[in-house]
Amino acid sequence: MSSAGLKFAVFTASLPEWTPEEAVGKLAEQGWDGIEWRVVDQQPPAGAGSFWTGNKCTWPLATFEDDVPRIKEITEKAGLGMPSLGAYARSHEIEDVERLMRGAAALGVKQMRVTVGKPGPEGYNAAFAQRRKEYHRVAELAEQYGVKALIELHHQSLTSSASSAARFVEGFDPRYVGVIHDIGNMLREGYEFDAWSFEILGEYLAHVHVKNAAPVAKPVEGANRTDWEWAWAPMRHGFGNLPKLFAALREHGYTGWVSVEDFSTEVPLEDRVRDNLAYLKEITS
Image 1 (cartoon, one colour):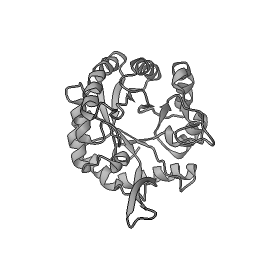
Image 2: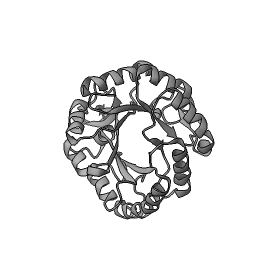
Image 3: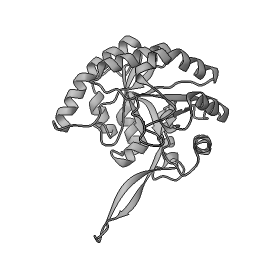
């Protein structure tokens, strides 16, 4: 745990090479406080596994409730906490949301992500209104099972910024609906000054994800111009100023969990994860 009272976990989407047993063992050995399990039915990988397909550190949604005893046993044996579930069910997939909440409650996890996705042909405003309607049922389930539903700040989604998320959750009870702040996603789209973004979210700030990214130049072949795109970057070397982020978190009074999901690949996985914890301790001491 940091001197600021924060607790640090790793979201297992970023641990594709490790089995769950390997993950809890290595994170405990390195000194992490917790683990945020990824739960989703994956598509078979076309080749080698990756963060998003063939990820070994993912629990299938189809068997999640049956897997709860094993998840609980290996996590508690390693002495790790579980700040949240990294689930992928959307607000309209209400049967999956309820299944996940039942499993989370049995596991002792107090919050989980319930995504709202991006607008379709109906456009942003119509999709935003529809997802808000759906989230009323999600909030009812959250109250029923004691598992808070979290909306993530994510680029190319209905809630890419703190302002859009605050507008989405307005009127919901913050005991049952909250927001995940994610600077890495917000760099790509939706970034608002750190201190202001925390103030905007207020009591709805329920969890924090941390990763980093950087713009990469892409010269356009046959044209005298350059396009740019974002790529994931090591936490120490990305565009996001993480020391300022944590200073703003401290000023806001946040003392909850921070989950790292580092999708950079320049450094081997075990070294990358170990150095991320060292860096977090450096900038929060």
